[in-house]
Structures are given as C-alpha cells and as structure tokens.
Length: 124
Image 1 (spheres, rainbow, N blue to C red):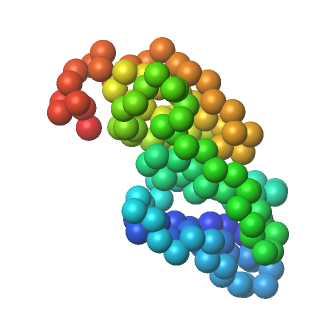
Image 2: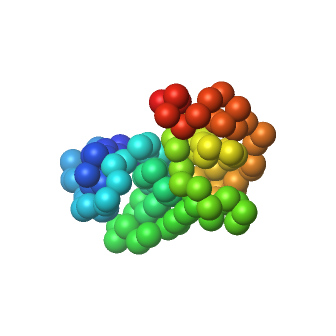
C-alpha cells in the first residue's frame, strides 16, 4: 500500500507505507504533473499531452503510455485542458473532447467542444 506524488517539473514519486521507502519513477518532464492514479498493479501520472504508467512492484517498469494527441487522427490541435478523477481523464481540445481510462487505456470521444463556448482566449 502506498501513495504517489507529482511536481510541476514532472517529477513522479511512489511512497511505500510498509517500508517507508520513496522511489522516484520520473525525474523531469517538460510538462508538470496534472493528475495521479494508483491501483493494485500500477501507478499513472497524467501530463498535459499524455499519461505515463509504471508497475507498482519493483523494479517499476513502465506499464503504459497514452498520447492524447493520437486519440483522434483528424485532430492535429494541441490539448487545451486535462481534468482527472480516479482513472478517468477528460481531455479537452478546442473542437473535440475525449474521456480516457488510463488504467485500461480506453478512450471514448464525446460531443463536447470548447469552441462552442467562445474563442480560445475567452476560455480558461
């Protein structure tokens, strides 16, 4: 049993409650960590453009990578915002959106569009 922590500089750490050991899973990223999820088998760090996963058991091999830009081949726009609750990540583009289950690596496209609510400069 343990927990994860992430920084705005992309550092991801896994803390084990049993032996009180901190393991660094990632030391740096150009993007800050936006969300974290830990299940029985792996830990996941959500960044702006994707999600990285590591096996929970040592030696913490990379378990999964999801690149949000590859969710829709027609959409070449960058990610505008990322929201996460548990394993579900809502990825918002200007003209589309998707919900990604980071643990199962499944994505479902949604009809919500930020563009319907104003220009990019008007939306935070």
